[in-house]
Amino acid sequence: MIHPSAIVDPGARIGQNVSIGAYSIIGPDVEIGDGTSVGPHVVISGHTRIGRDNRIFQFASLGEVPQDKKYAGEPTRLEIGDRNTIREFCTFNVGTTQDEGVTRIGDDNWIMAYVHIAHDCRVGNRTIFANNSQLAGHVHVDDWAILGGFTGVHQFCRVGAHCMTAVGTVVLQDIPPYVTAAGNTASPFGINSEGLKRRGFSADALLALKRAYRTLYKSGLRLEEARAKLEQDAVAHPEIRPILDFLAASKRGIIR
Image (cartoon, rainbow, N blue to C red):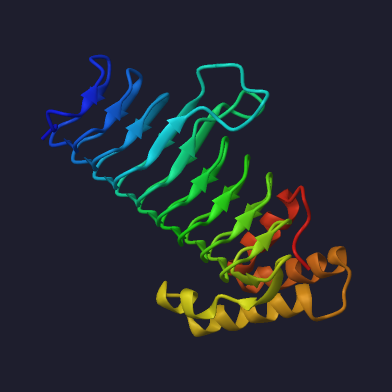
């Protein structure tokens, strides 16, 4: 399952039924879980742990040092979960000691070509990153988020669960859960109704979230006033609670 031209360091830990393509290079501190497929011309370096049943396509570079001038060779990490698809020319960097020292990607993500995930990012589960989506350092992307092609996310921003961005979106502040965003810079354009329907949200839940969106963005209320109104609404509609939790944790402020 390992091509004769691949270079696999003896210190690397390779699971069962792993395939490694021609001319790929696997470093000494790399762990690859069972059933993962690594294509040709892939470089996996650094302290990198990859889970089970991932598909990594040709020319990806995973676990390289961060593009951060403060980085001084510390043994920081990249952790990738299970069943992810990582397409051609993706670049994922290890973390830095300015954060928790780890870049982490969850399970069942669909990551298309030329995506960059910088140091100290956190990507949840079941996300979709279209071609050329780019995350700067310390970005958090929550479960089920979808980034349109050529979306760029500024460092320290957070993209909430079930969000969706349009092609070419520039994200400079946090996007609350369920919201669709577009533009340079990103503006809100309603909730991700179609995505939520596909994930089993009821008609009642969708209606409550649309009302919550109007409270947050269309009511003319100040942010603290909108939060107070959402607190009342969340009693009857718990699907609103993730929006409130997100607002409470936001450090950069939300797109408005």
